[in-house]
Every structure is written in structure tokens, then in C-alpha cells.
Image (cartoon, rainbow, N blue to C red; front, side, top):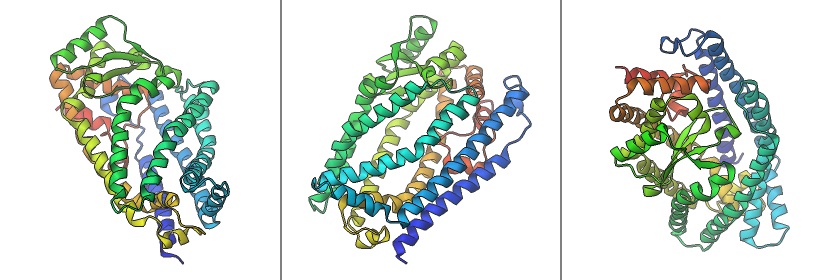
Length: 409
């Protein structure tokens, strides 16, 4: 058997089994006893509901992952990639457009496979636990808008990547790396202004105590912002959140309307102080630089496997191409991606602790921030006792109990 095929199958099955082990450990970690820190925030019935939510999402993930793995294995072993390549080549549109058609065909097939799970997760599970606010119209429009963005933005970027690798330059990967980096930086400015408003409504936060306190805190910290905005998060879900977009003086503070409804001004200011802490402590540029370096590593490794005959034989391909190399290399890169993902999460969790400290030190409101963390967990039915292995392998944020304990010591 082709050694590349053996390796790909081992990676796919191994990743699946690792996910199942983590899920099993995480479910067995659920404890019906309410942690002392949450007495008064969680009533027993709602706490049991939060654990049922974790169980149901985990079981649903098991079904989805099992079906998707079975389909992927069948697709590989039955020559599905070669069939997709034949269809794309049959159009006779040249190597670059053929590559775009080939990759978009695979993306479309993947999307169709995941669509029933997305529908069930949104309209059954999320609705059952009181989260879903998405209408069928909004759901369909989101899908169509995502497809338009994929065609308008994804097509030229993919075509450029294929063309650059096709020039046969030894340093083609470097040029591709530069092009992708420029695009990523450009998108940090374009997304908040053009793309995000296409999906949600952003309005300036109305005048009042909350806005005045946020702006006063930003001035006190020397933190330049473009404005404070409210987003209609309730259009899709009752879950709460807040985030920043943009860089430099173009930074915007965005609060979900659901967050504003459920938290006091002190709590909201503490949440934003935490987010500002990521900027003040340099976490955002560090993570961006790390991401850029990881992209460079990936592209360099990709350049070593472009049009590799053995790799193409593993997938039963009749023709070798640059565009299929991008897809097949993704399977081989998966373990490296996992290692980098774990390392990134370890750094991210340290950043979260540091941003927590920044929030309480600059606002001098430890109690308000702790209360905000508790309310966020309760409102989103978060798992309060995730297994340590799940935290280590998958979580970008520390468990809320660890964050609270550090703040209160």
C-alpha cells in the first residue's frame, strides 16, 4: 500500500480517536455538585441544564464527526478526488481556473455534507436550550452571503496563489507568503467596515452612563478608539459577547446587545478592560506575528510537496497538479497544525490570565469582573469543569473557576 495513503488514513483516524477520548473524559468530568463559587448564580435546575447542554453537544459532535470521517474515507478510497479533477479538467478552462473549480467543488461538497448538521444544531439543539434566535431567512441569507464572499474574495486569492506556484520559481512560496500576509493585514481594516456590517447591524452606543464610562476609561488608559458600537447579536443567538475590531486609531469596541441587557455598567466596563488589556499588553500583535510565521512555515513545507507523484498516487489521481497539491498537503500538515494549535492555546491561556489582572488593576473592581465572568458562564451554559486534557489540547481560555480563583487570591 502507498505509504502516503497509510499516513493520511492514520492521521484521519488518529485525530478522530483523539477527539473521542477527549470527549469521553470531558463527559466523565461533569459533576452534578454545583461549585461553591457559583452558589447564588446557578440554581440546581439550570446547572443540570448546562450539563445536559454539554452532553448533547458532545453526542451530536460524535455523530457528525463519525459520519464525516466515514464519508472522507470512502471519498479517498473510491477515487473521489480524481473524479472531481476529471470534471474540472473537462471544462477546458486552463490550469488556474481548473484549480479554482476543483477546490471550490470540494468546498461545496464539504458544505453540503455539513449543512444538515448545521441546521439541526441551530434549529434543534440551540433552540432547545433557549439560544437560537436565527430565522430560516437569516440562516439562508448567511449561507448565500458566505458563498458570495468566497467567490468574490476567495477566487482571486486562490488564483494568485496557483499562478505564483506555477511560475516554477524556487522562492515562489516566499512570494505567496508575502501576498497572503498583505491580504491578512488588509482584511483587518476591511472586515469591520465592509464585511461584518453585511451580516450584522452596528449602531453607535447611545449616550449615557455606560458610554461615558467606557470613553473615560479609554482616555485614562491612552487607548484610542474609533467608537463604541452595539451589535444585534440577538438576531441569531441569545448568547453574549464583546470584541474589538481594527487596529490603531481605527479600533472599535463592539458590544452584543444581549451583553448590554444582562450586565451592569461596572461589569461591562470590566469586560472591556479585559479586552483592552490584550492590546495594552501587546497580545494582539504577538499573536498576529505568530500567525504570519506559522503561515510561512506551512507554505515552505507545502513547497516541498507540490506535485509529489507519490502523494498523488495515494489519492488515485491520474494527473499531477499544483491545485490538488494544496488539498493533499493539508492532510499531511494536520499533525503539525495540531501541535501549533496546542502551543498557541497555551500562550493564549496565559494571555487571558494577564488580561484578567490588567482589568482588575486598572478598574479596581475585582468583584464586578468576577461577577461578569460568572454571569457570562451562566448565560452561555458553559461547562464549569472541563477535563484538564481538553483544556490543554483545545481551549484558548482557562476554565472560569481557575480565572476566578486567581483573581480572588
